[in-house]
Length: 292
Length: 135
Image 1: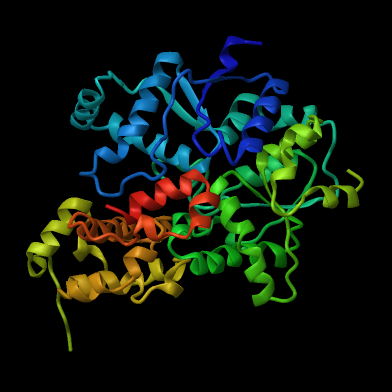
Image 2: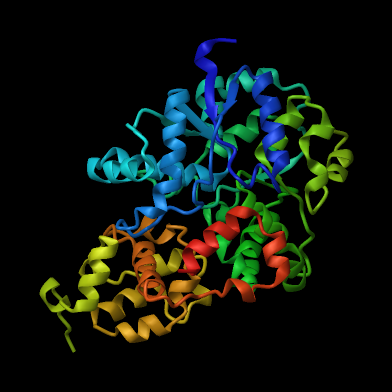
């Protein structure tokens, strides 16, 4: 394994608990693809949302501490959860361009973050470090016949000038990734719309409509499963399926799975390690029906 | 009737404060409505995103603060992404929320939340929700 493929890894709180399958499936695929994911020896919560009022420095304190820990252990940091990625990358951009803010945060934590770490989403690592061509060569079980819909949501793309991993209106990285695994990629209009995010704690019914709109858009375009990179998207969408059946009797619930579970499946990883049993709508019967 | 609104007309303590804490300039919006058209949550708002900005321009701050719009906004940034004037409405919404939260008026009482929300939600939902909705 080459030294260049070493990369710091920040799991974040949700992947350490409810989204464990997202974490374990990725660690295993990374090994197969020759990426050495080195989990940070110490980390804390990123804060989940980037504060949108610039005077709120407390809101970036947690993420700054993670960045500081990461730059001690390497030049690059990757994460899987879209929220963590968004917060870490925006915090980095905000602190790197403003010395005064950096000084205040450094003094507060008694750390010395200097801006020396690059933040990447794992999809970017797959595209740039490994290359989709090499992933294609490593596929042992092409996902032939599966119609999968990639769901970007908001945090991977916006704000485009700070975090966007691809074009903010017409991204293709997720589609290109899925295509390398041999499945049929479903294109649908609402792939960059928000699922409702954190208002699931206060406005369940509104989230059910927002997530339902995304789901229905994917379903009407032929999706047999929705693929995500965010545990909160997965949670909101899975929990909107029942309400959507009532709203649209033609709709049949479809599984929602993480992109790393799909990757692991195609790379021939041990099925038990992929965490499909944790999904609310079981993905395995669909696989069986396609002879996979 | 022709209404002309310039930066000078937009001086009030409220507007100054909201512009200061958000870094946004309210007068830049020319009401094209792209934000509302793209907003996935607008259907549930008392006042649509572009109307929130219009009401602020016209000095109706109470109407805006009494509406649910700022609490429904999920900060997905679709509005900002599509704004031809680069106005970040998600920041204005956050500024409005902060006006309430910084006075100690919360949207959600944590103790009153149903147990299933506290036990089922992924951590990121709780952390994000409490940061946005609780002082």
